[in-house]
Image (cartoon, rainbow, N blue to C red; front, side, top):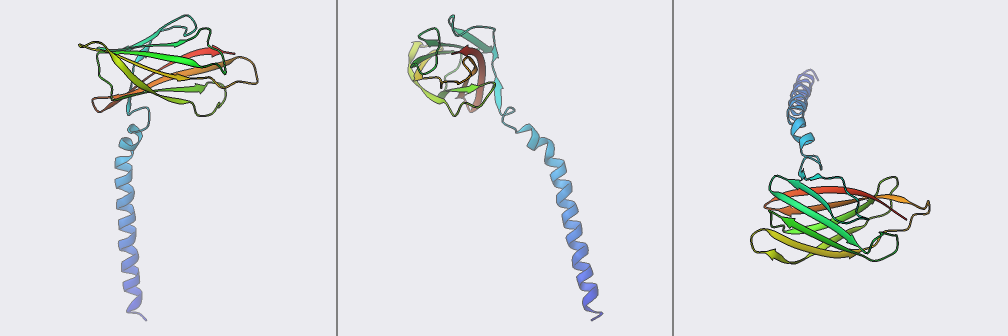
Length: 165
């Protein structure tokens, strides 16, 4: 009986040391895990103040520029909306428009845009798609139109807010 007690005690000590080492390893890696959050893996393009009801909204980061417009205007719920996006300075692998209600969840509304053409061979690429806004029972709703795209192994995003009935 006495011979067994020291071996159990030894195993408990080894397990305790392993748990402490694992804890230290996790604590050492915590900043890396926090840095890899959703926002950290995307490079934000700075959006300029605009109104999608009036026309084109633009954003940029370095040499990369995007211009987003939706028609017909005014933008209203339950009406087909044509999405037009122009990217300059980068060739995207794919482009998506994600529409979200700002004050309340309005369901998933993501549209994968299709490449239309290159306006000029140097650096302008056109993308398009179609979507519609869900109806809001409160009347007017603030929406966030978030453009997300992948290019050269990096994710980019920009967002524009607008109101619609």
